[in-house]
Image (tube, rainbow, N blue to C red):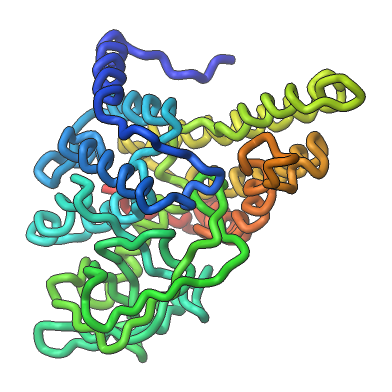
Length: 410
C-alpha cells in the first residue's frame, strides 16, 4: 500500500518557485553538525537571516493568518515549503523557536485581538525568537505543580521563581511561561500564562552544565539554561487568556508538543546509517553485505518510515482542522520508543563505531554517537513515555465514562 501524498500541478509549479527562491537566498557556508543546536554564533546568525527572509515572503509560518505576519497559505503549499527545506537539511523554522510552533499557537487561540497584533507579527516574520519556560526544579511532567509566582501590582504582575532546562545555545528575544497566580486556588485553576521580553530587568539566564539533553528530531545537545526571575515586573497586557486560566492556554501548546503538530520531515540519520554500513568493512567486506546487518537496516528503515507517516498524518489533520484525539501522543510515544529500538539496532550494526565521534574512527561526523546518547534522554522531554500513555488512555476513554478532549488548536 502506498501512503505517499500525490501532488497537484499547482503544487509542482509552486515547488519550482520555492526551489528557485531557496537557491537565491540560502546563506553560503551553512554547516549542519550532529548536534542541531551546536552552531557557531556565525552559523546561528545565518539561520536567523534565513528566517527573516522566509518571514518577509510569508513562508516562515506559511499557514498562519496574513494579518499577523503569516503566509495565509494552504496545507498543500506548506508541505512543499517544508519538503524543500528538508532537502537542504533545514527545518521550518530553520532554528529552534518554540514561540512560533507552540507559544504562537496559544496566543493565536487565546489572545485578544490587540495581543495577537502585538506579539504574533514579530514571531511569524522571524524578527524575534522565543523560548518556552515550563519545567521547574519541582515541576516537570506535573506541570500544574509549578511554583513560580505572579502577583498583581497595579498594571503589572511581579514574577519570582526559576525555570530549568530552557532553550539552546544562543539567546532569545522573548519567552513564554506559566506561573501560579493563586497560591491557594484549585489545582489547574490557579495558573496564568505570560509572554515576556528577555531583556526585562530581573531576568538572569545561567547556562546549565549537562552531559546531554534532547533536541528536535532526536539530536542531542548539552546546552540548556536555568532562568531566574527576581521581582520581574511584567505588564498585565502580557497575560494571555486571563488570570488563573493559564492551564487552558497551556493545553494548546502542550497538544502540539505532544505530537499533534505533526511533521513532514524525513529522518536523515537513516541515510547516513546506510552509507556508513556500506563504507565500513569487516573482513574485507562491507557490513551491509552481511544478511544479519541487512535485516537490522530494514528494521531501522521501517521504524523511521512509520514515524514519518504518523507525523505526516498529524500534520495533515492539524492543518485541515480534523478532530484530533489520541493521534498526537500516539506519534510522540512511538517516536520515543522507536528511537531506543533504532539506537540499539545501530549499535548492533556498527559496534563501537556507533559510540565515538573521534575523527580517526567515526565516519558519520558524530551523528551516530549523538543519537546513541539522545535516544535515551528523548524518552523524557515533551512529556515522558508514561505521560503519553496516560493521555492516550484518557482520549480513548479507557476506564472513564467521558473521553478527554484534545487541547484547542483553533
